[in-house]
Length: 146
Length: 219
Image (tube, rainbow over all chains, first blue to last red; front, side, top):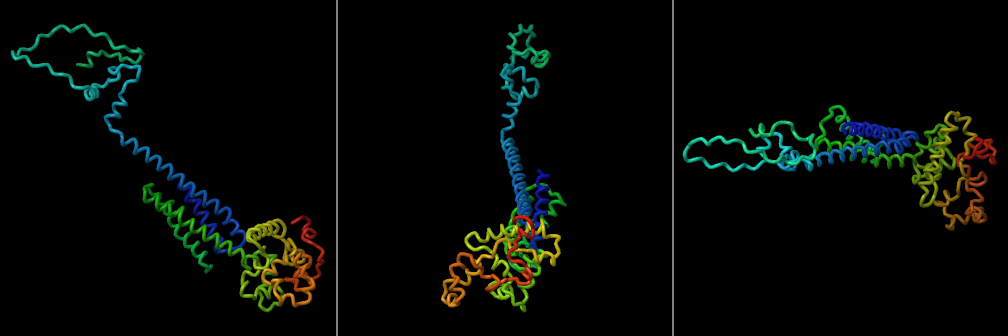
C-alpha cells in the first residue's frame, strides 16, 4: 500500500509538472500534453490514492472487528473439538482444562481426622467414542489427571 | 509570467501540492490519519484545483495570437495581425478592442453552439499537419504553399457585420450579391472585395491551388 501511495505521489508530481509547464509556456505541445497526458496521470494518481485508502480502511475495519470478540469465547472456539472428536481429547493442556471445566464438588472432610483408606481404583469407565484413532493422544489419561 | 487569475490559481495549487508530495516521498512518514489527510490535499485537492484552473487557462491560451504564432510557419501571420502599422484586413481587425490579442480566434473560430468544440478539433488537425509536414519546412518555403483547410466562411464575418442591417445593404455590391454571400458562393475576403486578409501570403499564388495540391494529400 505504501508503494501504491508513493507511485501516486510521483505520478501527481509529473502531472503537476506538465500542467505548470503548459501554464508558463502556453504553446501547442505543452498545452496538449497537459490536457491529455497530464490529466490522465493526475486522474490515475488520485485513483491510486483512493484505492490505497480503501485498502487501508478495509484492513483496519477487519482488525477492529476481530479485536472486539471476547477473549474467552475465542479461546473456547480455538480449543473446541472438531465435530468428530471427543471434548476430552481436545483438552490436552491441563491448565486450560482447569480454566474451562467447571469446578468439581469437594468431598466433605471426615470428622474423625483419619486419612481415608486408599481403595483400589475402580474399573475404568468405557472410553469415549473416538471416530479417528489417529487423533487420540497416546499418553495415559491417569497421568494427566495427576 | 502569466497574470490571469486562472493561471495564478493553477500555479498556486501546484506550489502547495509539491511540498506535500516531496515531504511524503523524502520523509516517508507512517500512514496515520494525519498523513492520509495531508496526502488527500497533496494528491487530491490541490492538484484538482491546479488541473481545473490550468485547463481553463490552457483553453484561453489557445485563443491567443501568441499561441497561433508559436508554430514557426504561422509567425508572419501573427506578426502582421499584431502590427499596428499594417493595413491588412487581419491587422485592422486585430486593432479592434473587441478582438484584441485573440484576433486569430475571433475570425477563424467556428460559429454556433458547438463552434468552440469544432474549432478545437480543427486546431488539432492543424497541429497534426504541422507535425507531419510543416515542422521542418522553412518559413519562406512554407508561406507560398500554406492554405486554409476550408474556404473562409462568410459566417465568420456576418456574425458581426450582419447582412440584415440597413447600412450593410446600402452598399451596392452587398445588395446585389446578398444571396450569393449568404450561400457562401462569393467570399467576403476574396481579392475583389475585402480580402485577402493576409495578402503577403498570396503573392504570386494561383488561387485555384489548394492544400491538396501543395501537400499531395487531403487535409
